[in-house]
Amino acid sequence: MVKTFIISAILLFLGILLLGIRVFFVKGGVFPNIHIGGNKALKNKGIGCATSQDRDAQLSKRQSSNKMVDDMIKNL
Image (cartoon, rainbow, N blue to C red; front, side):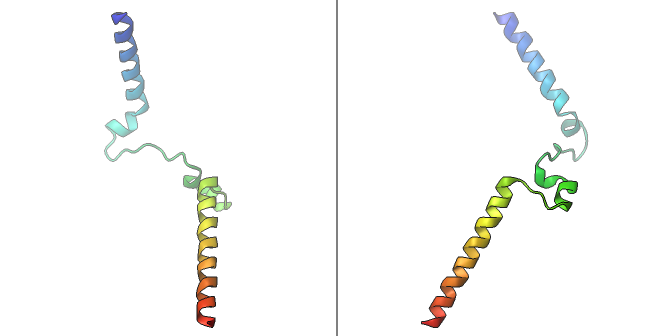
Protein backbone atom coordinates (compact mmCIF):
# COMPACT_ATOMS: atom_id res chain seq x y z
CA MET A 1 0.00 0.00 0.00
CA VAL A 2 2.73 2.46 0.96
CA LYS A 3 4.81 1.39 -2.04
CA THR A 4 1.88 2.18 -4.38
CA PHE A 5 1.41 5.58 -2.74
CA ILE A 6 5.10 6.47 -3.12
CA ILE A 7 5.15 5.40 -6.78
CA SER A 8 1.97 7.42 -7.44
CA ALA A 9 3.43 10.49 -5.73
CA ILE A 10 6.64 10.23 -7.78
CA LEU A 11 4.69 9.88 -11.04
CA LEU A 12 2.50 12.85 -10.12
CA PHE A 13 5.56 14.96 -9.30
CA LEU A 14 7.22 14.02 -12.60
CA GLY A 15 4.05 14.86 -14.53
CA ILE A 16 3.75 18.28 -12.93
CA LEU A 17 7.45 18.93 -13.49
CA LEU A 18 7.24 17.98 -17.18
CA LEU A 19 4.12 20.09 -17.73
CA GLY A 20 5.75 23.10 -16.11
CA ILE A 21 9.25 22.97 -17.62
CA ARG A 22 8.78 26.29 -19.39
CA VAL A 23 7.34 27.92 -16.29
CA PHE A 24 9.88 26.57 -13.81
CA PHE A 25 13.11 26.77 -15.80
CA VAL A 26 12.73 29.69 -18.21
CA LYS A 27 13.22 33.17 -16.79
CA GLY A 28 9.90 35.00 -17.06
CA GLY A 29 8.21 31.81 -18.24
CA VAL A 30 4.43 31.63 -18.08
CA PHE A 31 1.84 29.04 -18.95
CA PRO A 32 0.56 29.49 -22.52
CA ASN A 33 -2.71 31.35 -22.93
CA ILE A 34 -5.14 28.80 -24.33
CA HIS A 35 -8.17 31.05 -23.90
CA ILE A 36 -10.04 31.79 -27.12
CA GLY A 37 -9.66 35.51 -26.52
CA GLY A 38 -5.88 35.13 -26.52
CA ASN A 39 -5.76 33.65 -30.03
CA LYS A 40 -4.72 36.34 -32.53
CA ALA A 41 -6.24 34.62 -35.59
CA LEU A 42 -9.65 34.28 -33.92
CA LYS A 43 -9.44 37.83 -32.57
CA ASN A 44 -8.83 39.13 -36.12
CA LYS A 45 -12.00 37.33 -37.24
CA GLY A 46 -13.95 38.90 -34.37
CA ILE A 47 -14.48 35.58 -32.59
CA GLY A 48 -14.34 35.56 -28.81
CA CYS A 49 -15.36 33.26 -26.02
CA ALA A 50 -19.01 33.08 -25.00
CA THR A 51 -18.31 34.45 -21.52
CA SER A 52 -16.58 37.57 -22.85
CA GLN A 53 -19.26 38.17 -25.48
CA ASP A 54 -22.00 37.80 -22.87
CA ARG A 55 -20.23 40.24 -20.53
CA ASP A 56 -19.85 42.79 -23.33
CA ALA A 57 -23.52 42.41 -24.34
CA GLN A 58 -24.71 42.89 -20.77
CA LEU A 59 -22.45 45.91 -20.33
CA SER A 60 -23.74 47.59 -23.49
CA LYS A 61 -27.34 46.82 -22.50
CA ARG A 62 -26.73 48.32 -19.05
CA GLN A 63 -25.15 51.43 -20.57
CA SER A 64 -28.03 51.94 -22.99
CA SER A 65 -30.61 51.53 -20.20
CA ASN A 66 -28.67 54.00 -18.02
CA LYS A 67 -28.69 56.48 -20.91
CA MET A 68 -32.44 55.98 -21.32
CA VAL A 69 -33.00 56.69 -17.61
CA ASP A 70 -30.83 59.81 -17.80
CA ASP A 71 -32.81 61.05 -20.80
CA MET A 72 -36.08 60.47 -18.94
CA ILE A 73 -34.82 62.42 -15.93
CA LYS A 74 -33.72 65.33 -18.13
CA ASN A 75 -37.17 65.48 -19.75
CA LEU A 76 -38.95 65.77 -16.37
